[in-house]
Length: 343
Image 1 (cartoon, rainbow, N blue to C red):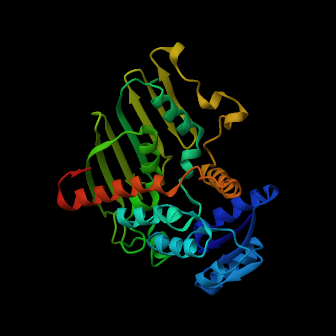
Image 2 (cartoon, rainbow, N blue to C red; image 1 turned 60 degrees about the vertical axis):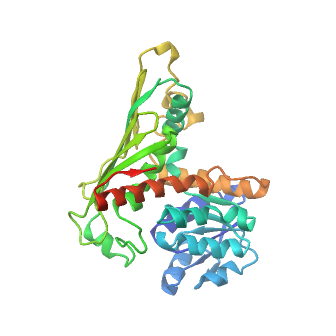
Image 3 (cartoon, rainbow, N blue to C red; image 1 turned 90 degrees about the vertical axis):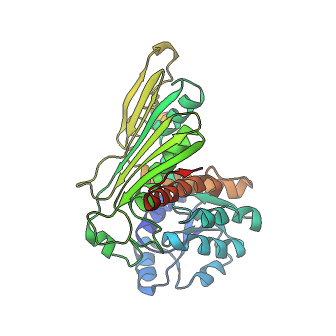
C-alpha cells in the first residue's frame, strides 16, 4: 500500500516515522509534496522518499499513490481532502478535521460522495486507558457519571508561533490552544463519555503570546443526563504538563494521564473492570500511554491500509471528528458573546 504525504511540516515527520515502522506490513512512503520546494526536497532526503512533488495536483495524479496523508495547515484540510477524494485517493487527515463545524461536516461527507476511504487522526483514542474507561462507562461500572475533566496544559513559546505564518491565526489554525493542541483532549473526553451535550459555556483569552487566537481557555459542558464536563486548555503553562483525564461516577473514579493510570478505584471491587495496565503486554503494558503520538499513528495508519485492502470503513471515520470541532467553536462563540451555546 503506497502512501503519499501532502505537507512536509512538523507532523509529517510523525507520519513518515509511523510508516517506516509499518514497512514489514507492506506499507510504503512512496511520495511527498510541499508547495515550498525546499521543504519537500529536504523531507524526501531525510526520510528516503523516492518521489517528490511541489504541487498537490502532481502527487494526486501519481497512479501509484494509494493513500495520501493530509498534513497541511488545519484551515486547508477540507480543500486538500476534497482534491484527493476527487482524484480517487484514500485519505488520512490530521486533526482537526477542519476549523468550522460546516467545513468539518463537508469534509466528513467526502467518503460517501466520492467512494473513498478516509481516516481521521485522533490517536489518543488508541490509548488502552481511554479504551478501558469508555468501556467501563458504557457497561455502567461507574454508575451515573457526575463529573468529568480534561486538563490540557501545554507550553509553547513565541518562537513556536513565529515559526509558521499560519500558526496562531483564525484563517489557517482555526484557533489556539483549544483548536490546535487541545482538540485531541476534547475529542477524547467526549468519546469516552459518549453523552449528548446540552449546553456549552466557555471563556477564551490571549494572555501571553502575540497571536490573534487564544492561548488560555476553559469550558463547562452540561450534558443532557445532567452530568458536567470541565475542559481547561493552555499553551502558557510552563514547562508544559501531562495531559490528564478524570471521570467521577457514583460507583468509582478513573483518572489517567500521558504516563498511565493514576486512579482506578471502584466502591465494589468485585464489580470493577480490570485495570488496563495490569493486563500484560497484550494491552500495551504499564507504559502503554507514553509514546501515544507515534504508537497511535502506527495503529491508525495500519488500520487505514487494512481498511482499503478489505473494503471496509476505517476505525476513526471523519464523521467521528466533527463533534470536537463543533464544541470548540461553541466555546469560542460563548466567549465572544458572554452567553451559553445550546446544542
